[in-house]
Image 1: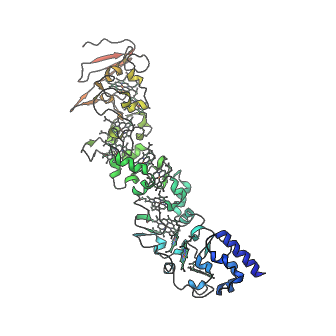
Image 2: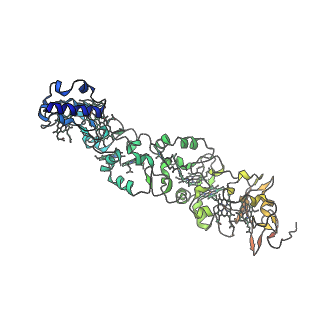
Image 3: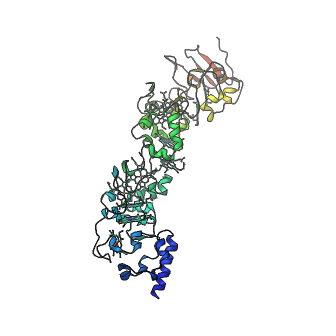
Length: 401
Ligand code: HEC
Ligand code: HEC
Ligand code: HEC
Ligand code: HEC
Ligand code: HEC
Ligand code: HEC
Ligand code: HEC
Ligand code: HEC
Ligand code: HEC
Ligand code: HEC
Ligand code: HEC
């Protein structure tokens, strides 16, 4: 009876394991000579588990143990024991703590296991977080988890040894990211206006947490504004041309009437943090110079504001910058030598005047004041371009040349 049930049991293993021990399929237990340990433990010892370690399956326990029952100890300790048959797992620059300690059996069952790769836990993430409890808490409490992290830690970390810090499969600051985000590698290296942030020491990790965060896109700060201002609260210099980049933090502190998207905390509404082919890494084009031939496709502003503000020569609704129904936006902007919005507006924040009108405008090397005065139904300016001129949307003003 015993032989029959063992036969059935080992047949079941063969079905379960498929390729693991084809030899056993050809020579059923009842026909072969039992090993020493099978005599002690019976052949049921090896039943039912999903992965059986071949040397254990072979049945000769003395491959690893000093005795057939496995009671007196091992012929040598891991990792040396394992290295008899497996290549070294500690041969690269960075070695995982338990591997360095030779604790192969902290993660692998040397005999058999319900889990793939003889693992002692039912999933990779359970295995990793059984020791890395802070990461377990992080996975359960954090709002936005990076999908490959939720999937399995070994998408990025080698469990044994690697040439990159934290046993990562490539340098974690950028190379690792672009292994999967190939489009970002192409984009960041081919755009005409590259972002200096990527040349900072932590590259992608200056802005993103590789595991996840409370914030959208796993940003390391609550909003893109806060993120940008970690670097843009001082005057920066571009590498290529040595151009000075305005201290935006200071500008916003001094100019508390912030433009809508900045009030929402979203600098990335207009700028692409990974660089772009437009002026100043804008997501859509914007004229590079004070004067520019008007082209509705050249203004990022029309992503949010109506283009009719500039296009309609006469209007009583599309803009308040009009003299009667004569559209003063049209007059200034919509021509071959049109003035770009920067002639009058600041896109980040203003203080002195309403409607994000700037105090001073830069014309060549001169920075001249626009001297705006608001009235009940309009206003007037006296920039260097012309003497004071008035507009009034209710009672059109006549301006002398
Ligand atoms: C590939 C090497 C290897 C083979 C083959 C092997 N063992 Fe082990 N065995 C180990 C290691 C390593 C440990 C120590 C496990 C640990 O550190 O927790 C161990 C531990 C044991 C223990 C102690 C209790 C336990 O499970 O932790 C027993 C009993 C045992 N083995 C029995 C056997 C028997 C019986 C066989 C043959 C059917 C066998 N082993 C085959 C490597 C092996
Ligand atoms: C006597 C040789 C031998 C020894 C000693 C040995 N193994 Fe193995 N091991 C094998 C063979 C054969 C395989 C199956 C072929 C393969 O996957 O390389 C295997 C497979 C494995 C696998 C992969 C299982 C799978 O599902 O793919 C792991 C993990 C493993 N061994 C861990 C260990 C650990 C840990 C030790 C030391 C405690 C050890 N081995 C010692 C021979 C050995
Ligand atoms: C921290 C847990 C952990 C420790 C410690 C550990 N391993 Fe592994 N090992 C894994 C995981 C997880 C896998 C599966 C990797 C995969 O599928 O990408 C694996 C896979 C393997 C494999 C099969 C695939 C391969 O890489 O060849 C072998 C063999 C192996 N380990 C041997 C060892 C040996 C020998 C030691 C001790 C020197 C050891 N492991 C220590 C977690 C560990
Ligand atoms: C048996 C416990 C154990 C398991 C399981 C385990 N680790 Fe570790 N891990 C450690 C120890 C111990 C260290 C070294 C601690 C240290 O240096 O601070 C370590 C270090 C690390 C480090 C480097 C951290 C640092 O600050 O240098 C990473 C990354 C890591 N483990 C990832 C993993 C991943 C991924 C897994 C799952 C495949 C895993 N660990 C499973 C115990 C474990
Ligand atoms: C998308 C790739 C990726 C995945 C998947 C991933 N990590 Fe990491 N991990 C990283 C990078 C990149 C770093 C380096 C972070 C740094 O330099 O600040 C890191 C660092 C670590 C560290 C050391 C620093 C720290 O944060 O404590 C530990 C521990 C760690 N990872 C554990 C895990 C565990 C556990 C998992 C699975 C739950 C996991 N990682 C999944 C990319 C990844
Ligand atoms: C193993 C592949 C892999 C690696 C490595 C990897 N990612 Fe991801 N990442 C993904 C997948 C899959 C998604 C979800 C699908 C998507 O949105 O593209 C994702 C999503 C993201 C997202 C959110 C995308 C969105 O639109 O919501 C960000 C941000 C991100 N990854 C940044 C990084 C950074 C930074 C690194 C390097 C530390 C990195 N990734 C490494 C696979 C990877
Ligand atoms: C200066 C900060 C910063 C750096 C450096 C940075 N990112 Fe981002 N990333 C962001 C912000 C902000 C967003 C959200 C953009 C948005 O809302 O339009 C984002 C979004 C993403 C997304 C989601 C898809 C998308 O394009 O909107 C991915 C994927 C991503 N980043 C990957 C990377 C990778 C890979 C690197 C390194 C090559 C990197 N990031 C470097 C700030 C940064
Ligand atoms: C880690 C530091 C860092 C962060 C965070 C950062 N920047 Fe930058 N940024 C720089 C540096 C350095 C430069 C100057 C070098 C360059 O890009 O030309 C720069 C330049 C710029 C420029 C001018 C680029 C040009 O050459 O035309 C813009 C626009 C800009 N950043 C916007 C942003 C925005 C928007 C954010 C937030 C999404 C942001 N930055 C976050 C470091 C950073
Ligand atoms: C409404 C769209 C918009 C938003 C939102 C926006 N910007 Fe800008 N930004 C622009 C435009 C347009 C320029 C080009 C200005 C010029 O050349 O006159 C610019 C220029 C810049 C420059 C280059 C300044 C220089 O010296 O040339 C930096 C740096 C910058 N922005 C950072 C930021 C930061 C940080 C935020 C969030 C606090 C932000 N921007 C939000 C539209 C925007
Ligand atoms: C992402 C959407 C968005 C983009 C792009 C955008 N704006 Fe705005 N803008 C707003 C919002 C929302 C308001 C209303 C809140 C406020 O007054 O700032 C606004 C208000 C304004 C006002 C003041 C309205 C008033 O009467 O006070 C001016 C002027 C302005 N934007 C100019 C521009 C210019 C010039 C551009 C192109 C460089 C631009 N905007 C691009 C969203 C945007
Ligand atoms: C010659 C100066 C000047 C130029 C150039 C200019 N604006 Fe204005 N803009 C004004 C004045 C003045 C107002 C205030 C009108 C009022 O309410 O009295 C204004 C108001 C606005 C408003 C608030 C709503 C409205 O139309 O009344 C928006 C939005 C706006 N401008 C967008 C733009 C955009 C986009 C550009 C570039 C395509 C631009 N402006 C170019 C002077 C200018």
